[in-house]
Picture (cartoon, rainbow, N blue to C red):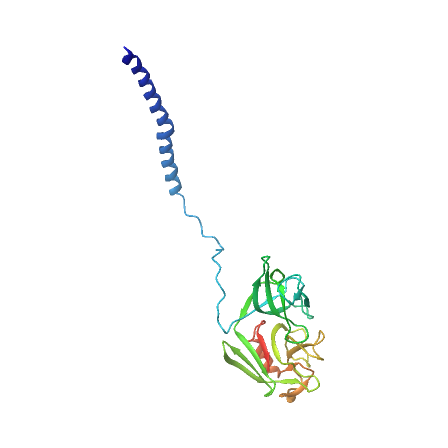
Length: 263
């Protein structure tokens, strides 16, 4: 009698368990399968227009040079730290109103996590370098060209990936106002100064002279001339002059940002 009394209760529990499983187990499995089939039938998502890939280190190509422009006026410092001594003011624009371009020499992070960039400055004395905060600069650009001005032989040569693709005689500064030697950058290309004196086009550089006829107070320019008979020669206040046909040809070959070596 006791066994038969417990049997109906056990049967009731079994029935309840089967109902619960049917409600929560069996029906969920069916719903899940249906949802999966619906998802599988949807079309594939379109590829994003912009893919952010893993960062890659810059190449070590010896013919590539990096340069950047100044996004916000700042101070260049002796060391990569805000409390280091300032060595020069770095404006956002050139005297001609174009973005201030600077050669990038190296980068470094400091103990506070801030990134600094070592650049060659356009302030006197020529060759001065300093550290500026990375956030004050724009993106990096690269070029594979290099302009070399040989003062001894009064000649300019443009190299692309180490090979000479352009060569022309030049006029340079006199003994009183010499064209300075050093490493610089071609930072803008200008046509608004086109005139018989400057020729059809001019390039501004980061080189500085004691005195020059280039606008802006002492920056060396590369431009044409209305006296081609004086070229080659030592005839300027520091600027580098070319015959008009040569400067026009150079324009089609040399981009802004090209390193300039005056030797």
